[in-house]
Image (cartoon, rainbow, N blue to C red):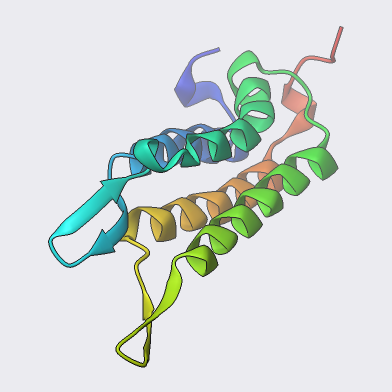
Length: 128
């Protein structure tokens, strides 16, 4: 099945997964002129949570929406935990060194939730 023939939910899942992968190229940690992208922060492991929905969207198989939503919610929690881990105090004031990439990743995980919910299982094949 081509991309144009997929349901809106499957399209959202595919786009959000690709966008989440691209966010790892953005800075995930910024401290003045120093920055570090997502791959060097080992946050690429967060992408494991996108595999189940992405695989089902690509192969046109029926998705268990509860598992898909749990994967997306865990991705949001891990992203927020990453933001929290970069919180520190500098010269007596709170400072957060999180970069733009982690916030875009969290947004992609929210889009993933909507995509999983909107996936039309009636058009998809049953799991064999």
